[in-house]
Image (cartoon, rainbow, N blue to C red):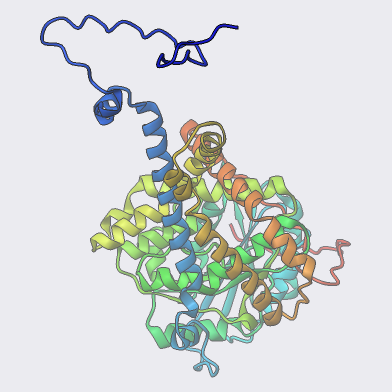
Length: 479
């Protein structure tokens, strides 16, 4: 063992790593600490503009969907905004004495199972001055036989008009019968409608009270237990006729309902009736009359609503919703709404009639936005904004739950817990369905396909129906 001399430094415990030689910076060069480099300057040259565009699209989509959801929610709640508004939406408790005469048009095509009962119910109206015109196609002997039998039962009220137009649709049938109308007021009903016997007295009173050119009565689908989608379809009608149409009437721009709508005959004759090529002839007539400044009154009382059924199959519902959406697009393109007197009315009209486009765009963009959220790294702020539409959506579902409960109380229907569960669970699938129907309408319109897709009826809203066809008698036919 060697002994270190006193005063010498000890050996290091670890062998030090030799230092790298300093770089040759050359003249006028400085060493810059990397931590002091301007990171903003570096980042500016490496911005991922594709990601930024995707994030901006997500934000824009979220804001747009939120705006649509909020406006829809406001329309749904309009009738309940105050006690006075709620009272004003109903018929008067004590109607005036009858002052008008009525003609009721009832078009039917392959409606043997339902049209006879509808005509009998209309013939039972307590109003003293009612003319009923059943309209059937010249190629539909089954429905024609049912209408003839009804006319023989009520010869003082029911007439039959045969529609020989080709191809056939509802507005052509209505126009075919209009020259035979003798009443001051022309009303439209569908072949399956269940109508309260006192309805026309209240409609007559509404005309007298308001001086309106058009009175829109309430329509309510009833068979909410038939399927998961029929439940949501029933609630759609409830909020549409109970609240939304009152808002549209107040805004003086209203797409009328397809039936239980009553128009002064002079106004119809002046406008040459209904647009024979439009798939939403009710909406088109409402827009046309609104653009002329016609006053429209809306009334809804549960006792006097016209009761109907939801389409019997999901395919039938898809076709019906496609037809409505495509009709809205036709009315938008026709441009009568441009004659509305104020800018706010024209903007509102464009927004409402463009709804099928908005729903179709939603159907395309929702899966795209979900893919971006799950597969693309999104900033926290953008991710939070994408959930913004959930707020009005959740509130809307809560309003629908309350509306289902009120529907049950008004119509003496027992709403069970499972009905509320179906309502909530069906929210997203029904929104997807609406988007699909809107996209289908856009595709059909783009192809120029305006064929009428008829909705079948099975009397699901009527109890104790005898489905056996009775013996039919022959009655006269007006041509």
